[in-house]
Image 1: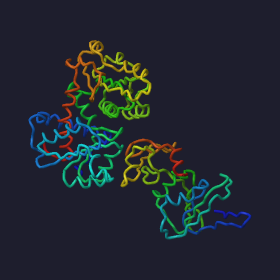
Image 2: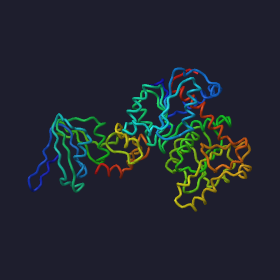
Image 3: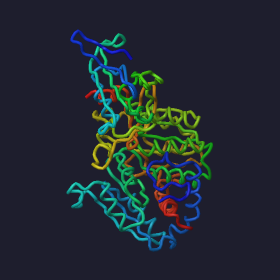
Length: 310
Length: 159
């Protein structure tokens, strides 16, 4: 389904022109009060979640968004456990069946590019809720919306992206959006988990910006936003090496006390111990509110793709 | 185009009208044919494989008599034989010469090397790449966005 110049699906963040993101955020602002109170603009519409990989948080967020819009949800929580998957049913066949039962599909899959295949074969909008190590566009959108909401702007802000910048799909997409909207980006990661050079050069080139690189959070405390990600133990075969590097990627209470006034701390969650739990009570600890912003953003995205009038 | 003669008297004759693809790396002539998709040609196809070449030592040649092909089809040769010369023949004379330039989109010719790419694991998917760079030749998978480098492309084509 096409709506004028707007996108028909949400597959990768790079498909969104800046104007369309601004339109979605404007709609999210409008729908924000209804993310608790509810509305009925999606009455009689059905959202289907097809999750081939588990994800409680993302799935619940999408389901809540649709219910708050006044629509209904049909869910396949564990699509790999279904008889169709066991029989080897393709993504193409699955979506062409499921689209008979719904108006929009949200899919998470372990294969990279799976959402794109779904979108090619489905005649209803498809939202990519994560395809392997490839993309998770709605996470990037809600992250950017969080910054805009909490800081009142994006352009000109200093944002430090910290932790696993090599394998973290969310930081690659968020960096893309931050560069698009004029934020100054500092990359903070141990050498082994540095931001991929190829992606960095392309983003710097595309937006005419220059990223700064640091190796310790202590060197990025002049940031307006500190975005934390978890450094996974599995990435380090040598446990001693892991212990050595993770120290540079922990946000302690002491570090937070020296952070810039008004600095906010974000995390895509789940977190382990990369953020000191004592920081949770600080006004700048935004990570749980960040998860909450996922609802109005997803409400806006669903409305946008279905052409609903808010 | 001159005929070629070995001591055994083998000759590749001229064509009056059509296309001659010359200077194909030896051994890739049949692959070129496959990529051009000429399963039911209207005209004749002549292939010379591993014939002598002053420039290359050995080469393949493909002659398509009374067959015309759109540029977007001929451009697929850029993946397999980027240095090949495409000669347009009319009334026995070469009326045009060009080289293939890689199209912006390449589908169904090479496959993604990423084992986690859906295009490799889904029966209904066809590989699809966008041209990232012509020199060196780099393709980017439209599904997983990993790149395929020139040496990887040639490795697949030559297999």
